[in-house]
Image (cartoon, rainbow, N blue to C red; front, side, top):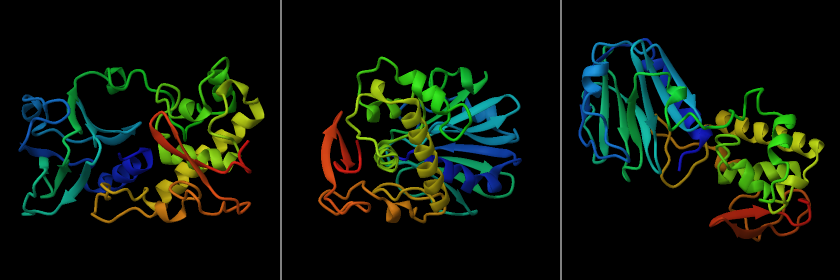
Length: 271
């Protein structure tokens, strides 16, 4: 599933081509995504200008004067900016046709993505209203994480992957951040000191920033908005490296299951 760095990479990629442009038309080839594409969407946005291209968690927000289109890429979706006359492929479900001749196209083989509309502030939408702070903003800091972990017996990995506590720290990025912070992913969240919370916050910010800079992690189903793969996978330290030497101590990286997800860590370096 595209995670925060992949979604932010996509947002940055499409923004220069679509922001401040007018939607001439909307083409929906398949309304049956995770939630049905609203039948009224075409009338809502046709002739309207995009005022901003934002992101909240894993959602891309196209802001108009009258409301906001909320887009989620699902398990395997991607957004591309297509030149005029680009033929639609299988699984190209939605096209936003722009006044500059380009189209913003949603490709979603598994149809777990979404294209929704809200007349209200998107932050009040049921999909976004309970989300935690953005990990790269000031509100996500040592004091906040320390407060959120008190009296929690759950593993620290499960806590930082909880979108109600902080958004966008998916499985890959949780493993990498915990390794950088030297924290065992199985450690009970409530046992972390303020200092260790601060180190983990700094590691999360570092890993996510690196990933965005590199263009997002290359996953089996993920490609960037221009069709090119991301490159951060080349710099992963522990994820997917079970049995290989730890880059710090040389001992084998261990793989376990936590909440039906693979966790990779060093039993020597992470305490």
